[in-house]
Every structure is written in structure tokens, then in C-alpha cells.
Length: 277
View 1 (cartoon, helix red, strand yellow):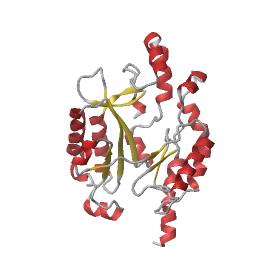
View 2 (view 1 turned 90 degrees about the vertical axis):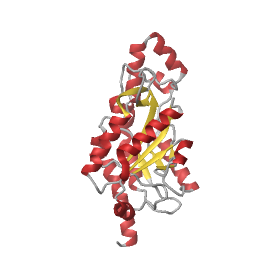
View 3 (view 1 turned 30 degrees about the horizontal axis):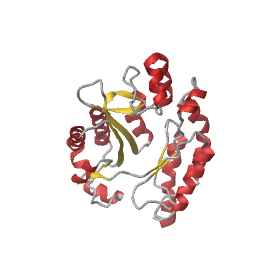
């Protein structure tokens, strides 16, 4: 959701202390820097779904300068509300009745129980019968048979009380700006073995405060785009399935390259080749 970050919004209070310090004294400069490094996507939700994206990592928070409603956060808060976005996703699902989405609500910030209940009720109200219950076997044939289109994973103990919310998805995150270190991290995780259920292999390059101070006029886009071809080659070598070293969900920032999305989708052909059906 970083395509709609609001430059005038408060800065994420979980940001590094040094960044919060600069924001107090030189807010215009600091916010420009934060915006460049926090923007990990330029396509809207609808454009992402049209491009072939089927997993959305949503970072949701209560925005301190707004009395009601929930927003997304990544360095700054978004101008678009969570409820507006959920309606946008639902409209897309209505137009694509055989498509299945997985939504990860795994980064929930500054939210009290009443905020969680408000969000959970909105999820149920907007998606209704499209929500796949967590007791269902999430195969395509089964989901199509039951007319389920969306799996929502929710990282909060309250989710245990609701049948339509799945547990949080493990996310393999290397936390590095170096592509070789990222790939080494993912290969090490694969060697240990895949989790039983859904999990995400994150191909996200991540800057820290030291890196930002050394590259104040750069951006996540400048860091990521030149390295996508190298990450794309790693994707091509993967295979899905239940084996120890198989991948499941693959996530990337700045989706806009047909090569990356098509490479992930083509991995499913390896399952067909293996089963012969």
C-alpha cells in the first residue's frame, strides 16, 4: 500500500530514534527521505492484482492524527483507509470469481482490542461468504467448489476466536541490502525445511538507518530495480510442492516487471509436469 503514502501524515512511531529526532527539526527534508525509502510499490492494489499478484502483505495501524478508521503504515501512513482498500479488493474478486487471494495482516501497530474488533468485523462484512474458514483444506478445487476466494491471515490472539481468520504466515525476511546475502539466507532456510502450511520467501531488500545516512538522496526503487534480474534467476530455479526445499509464496517489492510475476506463476507448471495432469 506504499503507493499512497501521505507525506503530511505523522511518522511511524516505531521508526529509528535518530529518524524521529531529525523529523522534529527538519521535517520537510526528513519526510522526503522517508517517503523515498518507504515506497516499495507504485502500482495500486487493482493494478497489482491485474498483474498477477495473489498475496498481499498489509501493514495496518491506527493513525494517531485521525479519530476513526484504520490506515496502512510503512514509515508514513497512507491516505487511503483499510476499509476503502478492502472494498477495492472485493470489487476485483467480484469480477474474477475463480481467483484466490491470500492476505497477510501480520504487521498490526498501535491497535487496541476495539481497533481489532472493528477490522475483523469489516473483513467479515465486506468479504462475507468469499472468506475461506481455517478448517478447510485450501486446494484450488475445494475453494472453487465452495466459492471461497480469499484467505485472511491475522496476527493477533483475537483471531483464534473467529473461524474465518487463519493464523499468521511465517515470513522469511533476510533484512539486508545485499542480494547475495539475501539468497544465502533463503537457501539456508530451505535447507532447514519448509513449514507445514503457508509461508513466504521474501525477496525484499531492506535498508537500515546507517544505509540511509550513507545514501540520503537514493531510494528503495534505486536500490531494488537494478537487482531484480539477479533475484529473478533465483526464482526460476525454485519449485513448489511439499518437499523439504520447496517454496510456497514468493514476495517482492516494486512489482511492475512482467518477468518476476510470470516467473513465479510458471513455477506451478513444474507441479503439472511432475504429476502429469
